[in-house]
Amino acid sequence: MLFRNAHAKLTRRIRSVSLAEEYWKRFRIRLKSDEEVEGIARAGELVVRTLDMVAAHIRPGMTGESLNGLVHAYTLDHGARPAPLDYRGFPKSVCISVNEEICHGIPGSRELREGDIVNVDVTSILEGWFADANRTFLVGEVSREARELVDAARRCLSLGIEAVRPGATLGDVGHAIQRHAEGAGYSVVRELVGHGVGHAFHEQPQVNHTGRPGMGIVLVPGMVFTIEPMINQGGPQTRRLNDGWTVVTADGSLSAQFEQTVLVTETGVRSLTPYAL
Ligand code: MF3
Ligand code: CO
Ligand code: CO
Image 1 (cartoon, rainbow, N blue to C red):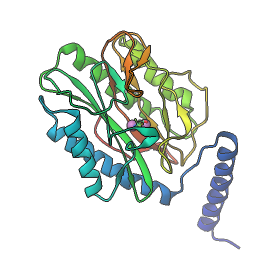
Image 2 (cartoon, rainbow, N blue to C red):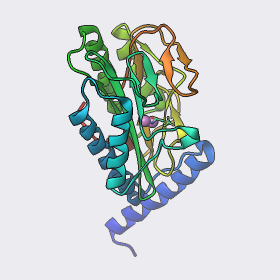
Image 3 (cartoon, protein in one colour):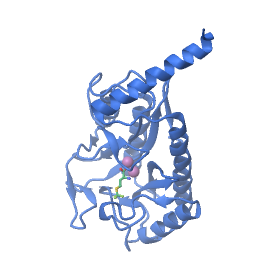
């Protein structure tokens, strides 16, 4: 004989255990327990604070190198490690991508200039848990064109997150993003995608930023992944620089991106790297 609440709780637990098994077997997706989620959320809080720290320091004349130093020191000071450093040979602690650079820019001696749009992508490992988020910053006064692109990229992330709930699909998320971006006359980068995250930097599933409603993997509670649409002013084509990392727009047009790490909850979505969009 079981009390009703205990019975419901047990049923939920059995269901979630078999779901976790199924998602692992079918998709190699590791659903996260409540405890694991709290670990990722603590890492996420630090990532958000790191981005706020960057926001307070970024200004014309500053180099990527110096921002990298600030992020590196801030991360260590808070008991964490920067995930990019030495990741597949990446030489720095943060990715900094300016103007036509889409992502994976290597911080260097180039000075930021008034009018630049600068993406700063922070991933921290705290007590073994990974969280990943980025923002595109405006340096001083920025052209209306650039500002509108950045606003569209921010809105794309916001709409992508709003599409997340149990029972929805990854195709729903991609579709929400693509619809807004293309509706505003921009394009969505295809070659680079969001990803599961938590135990490692990049886990299953891949999260496309384009898609068709109802297609793709069904979202279930405990899934943790990034949404990180890269939105180009011109065409979606990309090119990689000779440094082996920096991805730029093939046509030299501007590109902007925002990223958060999100959790599918029992009822909807929770950002584990929450900042205002
Ligand atoms: N943070 C990036 C992402 O959103 C990955 C950077 S990989 C690095 O997935 F090696 F360039 F750091
Ligand atoms: Co990411
Ligand atoms: Co990132």
